Length: 87
Image (cartoon, rainbow, N blue to C red; front, side, top):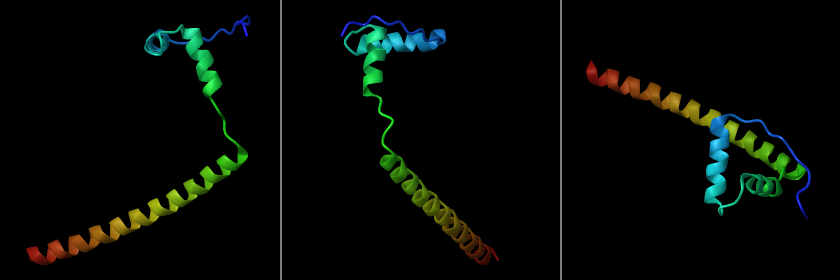
């Protein structure tokens, strides 16, 4: 299908330069073609995938909290051992 609709995207000069550099590396293709390809490749995901990610995030948060608690216990134990050795 021919591209006939125009979309104006404002970006900083640095962003434009990065887009043009990526387009040159991708083919080379035009910046517009790179944007079209990116839009085609972008997938928001399904509700099921989002729910799975939320569940995994919950597991990660719980694991992280337990890891921090264990590190605090280890740090305290190490402080006690070092104090005993010093004194």
